[in-house]
Image (cartoon, rainbow, N blue to C red):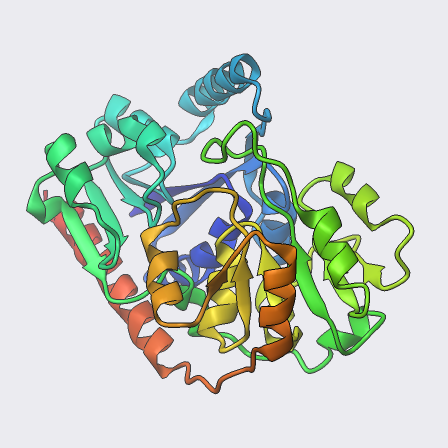
Amino acid sequence: MRIWIDITNTPHVNVLMPIYKHLRKQGHELIITARDFSETVPLLRQNGIEPIVYGSHQGKNKLKKSLGLVARLIKLVFGVPKFDLAFSLGGVYTSLIATLRRKKSISFSDNDFSSHKFLTYMLSDYFIFPKYLKYQSLQKKYKIKNHQIKTFDGFKEDIYIADYKVDKHFLEQLPFKDFITIRPENLKAAYVPKDAVTIIPQLFEVFKDENILFLPRYESEKRFAEGYENIWYPEKPLVGLDVCYYTKAMLTGAGTFAREAALLGVPAVSFFPRNEFLTVDVILQEQGKEFKSRNPQEIKNYVNNAKRSKVSLERSKIVLQEVLDIFDSIINEVEIK
């Protein structure tokens, strides 16, 4: 089968890789397209995939964003080769183009804040959700049938944590061995309030006594590190799971890094700039594996007292196999039809 996969955001690359390898092993032909946003394309290339690149991120300006979405859609409509099945992590493009070409599409999502992607819910043929996700309201609103929904018992991060192997040489890339990691909020994201401001400068101040691995999202954020001798940022992407494994604590303004660290037993802090959190994050917070706060001193106190916990990757391996089985079952359904 010829399967088109569209990747639009950096965290999606890690989720893709085990699925990509499995589908290739099963003999399927894969077409990979990507949006030039953050570290998405470099990470794909780092994993040996040369994507067909269409479009880039247009920031928070509504007009630029809308024009960018339309421009990318037009390029994909005329540029994507023939395919039998389309897949994306919550993207609108695959479901829309698959519908136009009368092909089937799969949408994978763990995001409660995706209401702006209404076309995805209206047009996709199959949905893969973590069982923790409160998808019932979406199902009712968009009249999604039960047989279209496939759920797995875990988190999307389990999919690639399952095969994680520690890089014993990772620390050779850094100027220090003992450090905390800080990743800024994604203030350009559609789900972040317009009036949200970063707390990175305040975090740098309260953690003056720690070595800080800083992972800016955008070039403009590097200025926050100016004047600090204890802060270092890489010039090329680092392997996220290695960062989580070696760091003393992971502090992030979004969710992926916090969930990765939490599932590896590393103290994880999310200073996400919204009062509401994704359901998957709330579950980890209720389990005591993820700490939420936007108060720099509270975060400092938590990090000072938090300890790592031992974890087994066996649970993640079970989750990965469950997801791969879901893909195989959907592909079989599509082939039969």
